[in-house]
Image 1 (spheres, protein in one colour):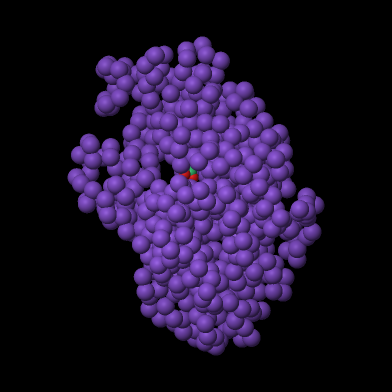
Image 2 (spheres, rainbow, N blue to C red; image 1 turned 180 degrees about the horizontal axis):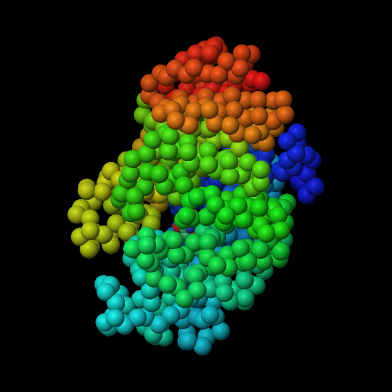
Length: 587
Ligand code: NOJ
């Protein structure tokens, strides 16, 4: 396997340097739900090896593999008990090595999920930390004494009588972010589940161990990392409580902490180089401000990550709680993307996604998963593959997979759905499941985690056994076999999108200029590189929409890509059909 290094990087007409990870399309594999090779109902690494042909045929360049490390699976592998071992549910280290080799043989690179804000409570470090206040690894985690209940006006049903957690932070999965450990009489911080204690990055030994572990994986030949909630690793001094009056919530307290750039800078110097694809998941404050710039800046004050995931567009329809939704419209969505496109126009780089394992299916959320499932899935794909940035395809997206029709709480598996809803039901904050059913159907992460639909056979060809989470009942219609057999499918359109990007520098490096920021249903823009220009028009509506396009763009435009199978011609007045997407080459 030989991949070009691009440390120097040839320069493009706009002066920018070529980078392989800017030109790449990343495909995300959530192993639990991808393909089950051994008939236990849970996806595994051999299942992925067996399906590398699917990825190769799609044409993607990189696989981001969600965690496969040894884990009690409290959060489907985001609770790691051993960073250097493969969970036996997923296979063995030999299987993983075979996966790496097979991908590389197909010229597909592999990036691993790096989960180092927290470990599992079953990790040896934490087990040691529990033995006493003086244990060797005690300071690998964040321990504090509780507060005197008489002195605070907060109610909790955890911890010993008369004592409340060290501060009022809430876990992202609901309830307090602290768990009491009786034997040593202190509380430990867990921003996620109580089985995911936060590591104490202030301790240099933690950083040494994390960096050493990263280098160990690099030596094995991987091509980069996706960094889980990496902007949480530095906690604010004194761990101050929230300040509701000033509008400061837990998430505001814990993101982009005072030493985060120092820690990431150290990681850059001790582990990373620009030959890797590194993408940092950055939760919280969604604005593309100074922190965002520093995370991805290659300059001396930058952390040098290749790109980041922000959440601004996937928070548009979300309330504070998982059972709350808010209204959004296309102008909001465009405004978010326009801001981020502008933020990294000269330096830094965007990652482009509309769904992943933590988000509902994009066609159900941003498209129309009924009558126009196929058209809108293709339109959304067109958007992702023609903006400036690196597109991420989440497994099943290329098949146009949709949200799942959840009927009861028993249908869900996700700790991030179950914990908060159960707590709210117990406390009477939520009256009944039915009262929140629609919102959970729209919002739950489990929508993305149902098995990939490979065929119309039983269990959608995912497994011979009952899967760990139900298959979407539409698998008889929506599945890879059917998609492959149909030239007009979402799948084949995605293949064209990937190829289009590979063949046209303007798609990767061109400047982005929005044309219709205020239009309610049209999103039109140009991409320009030297004397090459693309003109993209997307109709986000169930109705036909007319667009009076700028004359200079349509003059000698030719259609390069479109999601209706006929070419409707080009004119200053463009009549776009429902969910129609067109990409013109123009001047
Ligand atoms: C973000 C991951 O993507 C999500 O699945 C996980 O639950 C949290 N981080 C905690 O690791």
